[in-house]
Length: 213
Ligand code: GTP
Ligand code: MG
Image (cartoon, rainbow, N blue to C red; front, side, top):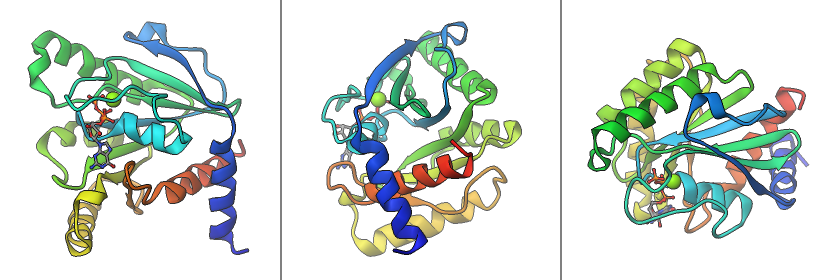
């Protein structure tokens, strides 16, 4: 087995165990105690963050999903094992919930991303049908400024043809070049079809190995 295959297998095993919900926080002074590393899933409302957590864990309704944006309203923490927790974040860029909520969520998202000591990597989800949007830029800037390593995941690739997807990847990579905290490799996924899920699990297993966790 080559190195790449090893991590695919490690990733499979990592998510084959029992995963569970541990905590929901709507305020930064109410985060769960840190145990092991955390990875966070961030992105605009409705890009498919909660669906991706379900696809990773192979569970249909571990994280709550919805057709309408604004479903996830708190930081939801899920334990993968005693070395790793995943955080499903509220989406940003969705105005219809009202100004106060937008301000509260945006503050929470930025504060968490900037300040969580055991945050090993942020997975920034971009809907492959739409690409990076203006509302993504402040989050990219926060991650750069806080030097929090982030990796872009394209979601919903089942909705695109292969050449459209190649074009989206190239265009996204060109923007990421200007963002020093970004991880160069983009992962193309479909939570519905399962594309890219083994690769994402492998990337997470590799990250844990690199951090000695
Ligand atoms: P908020 O919590 O509101 O920020 O949304 P979210 O980013 O958690 O999105 P969620 O997982 O709730 O999914 C939003 C919508 O996108 C739902 O209707 C999902 O069925 C749909 N969706 C998620 N993943 C995929 C996918 O891989 N392919 C397609 N075609 N649709 C998807
Ligand atoms: Mg959600």
